[in-house]
Amino acid sequence: MFTGAPRRALLVLGLASLMPCGCDVVYVNYAQSSGIVTVRTLELSPSDISGWKTPPGESYKILVGDEWYGYIDGGAPVYLNNGMIEGGVQKIHGASLQSAEIWVMDFGTAQNAEKMFADEKAQISDARTLPSFDAGVAVFDNGASDGGTAHAHFSNFYFQIALSGFNDKLQAVQSADLFLRVYQAKMRG
Image 1 (cartoon, rainbow, N blue to C red):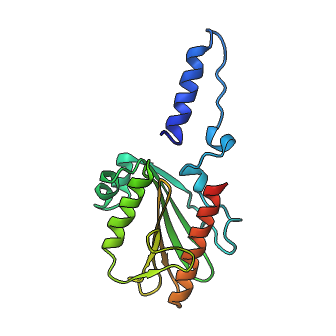
Image 2 (image 1 turned 30 degrees about the vertical axis):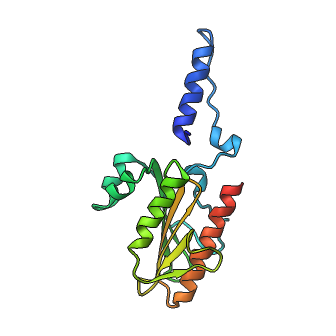
Image 3 (image 1 turned 45 degrees about the vertical axis):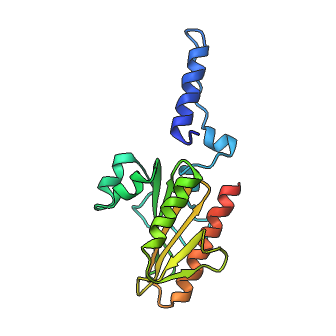
């Protein structure tokens, strides 16, 4: 199943081949008009989570395939070999010095996303469950002293949320849980 840009390209290409010469092709943002969930539609907006916003000069980055090599120092093959098609990276800041770097990745199938989650979960030595999720869907890595990293998979998407700047570990866990609940709601539409 195609998602995002490939689907739009096929739609436009298909329409263009059916149209007689001289007609204009009208581009429809298929993801926005049909309710299809893509990496782009999962970008967090300032209204999604109260108190969290994108810092000045930062933007949501969409990375496809080999573009991850320039973003993840040495780690791209793990994601690409597990079937990642595209991903989005978003940095947001909360109260005080709290920050989150969020990776939203489309793995094409639920099986690929679940495998990525299982591979990452197996490497966590100090895992904690999140209040709203079963440990087979989401976990929190307590590894960082001032936060931690949440890992989750929903449908064909894998999420990684690295939190820092927290004085209270429980607050970091609760924030990760909130972020993931927001993503679940966005996926339901």
